[in-house]
Length: 265
Ligand SMILES: NC(=O)c1ccc[n+]([C@@H]2O[C@H](COP(=O)([O-])OP(=O)(O)OC[C@H]3O[C@@H](n4cnc5c(N)ncnc54)[C@H](OP(=O)(O)O)[C@@H]3O)[C@@H](O)[C@H]2O)c1
Image (tube, rainbow, N blue to C red; front, side, top):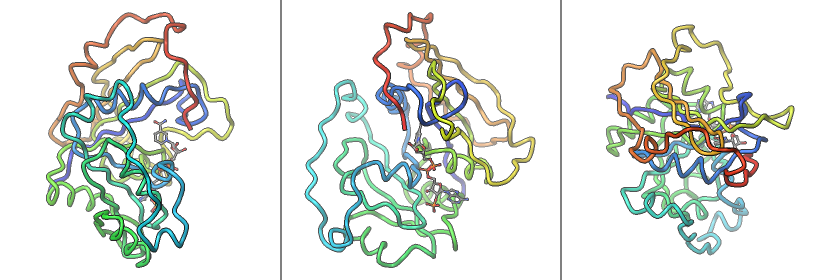
């Protein structure tokens, strides 16, 4: 079994933090959705931001009524083409806001990655929500097996992440990252507890931490998008640079011209 090409994608401050800085979530997602991708791999902490968690009573029934979200201006093209699967790593069964994810216009289908330890009650809940479950791994989700099954059973060839440093750290430690794309906002993290781009629970082998710079795109407002290929990756290169993003390469425009930044948390 082979696995898809995996691109880690984050917006960060110049000091490498992915929360508590002046970023622009709209610009970040607009850029990310402009690349070809078959699935978005999201961490369970990130996925909980879709909406309020269902109560125990709601989770056992049909759930709250949630009206479909309109397509935000500027994202019409992103939803017109083939849409990606939303795949959430959720071995502990923490995500209970699927109704909100399903109301979003971005995804073609929904998969929750579970392990042998995922509570049965949560699997029943996912079944009621029409969320497919891929069960792999004993104590935690086996990310490598999950990616291989997405490749073989769902035809997923390109994955982009939407997660934090813990998911990225776990993917890197397992040798499952091929490309790292960081949108660098011209700002510094404002908080001593700002989360970092990569959070490791063990040392990476030196050769697994080497990157080749592949592409640099400068966007308005002093924003830079850096695209690195992992030196150790032997996956077939599937460039995720879209013609639109290449066309965006331009001299640095005055920062004042940029959209008003929002805090990315
Ligand atoms: N600036 C950006 O670009 C950006 C983008 C997305 C998110 N964020 C921010 O990132 C923060 C969340 O980051 P996070 O890293 O805590 O959460 P996360 O990426 O949302 O979730 C971490 C995920 O990694 C899984 N995981 C960790 N180690 C694993 C391992 N060894 N094997 C299998 N699965 C493993 C966890 O699984 P379990 O649940 O089973 O433990 C969990 O699903 C939020 O504040 C969010 O706003 C920023």
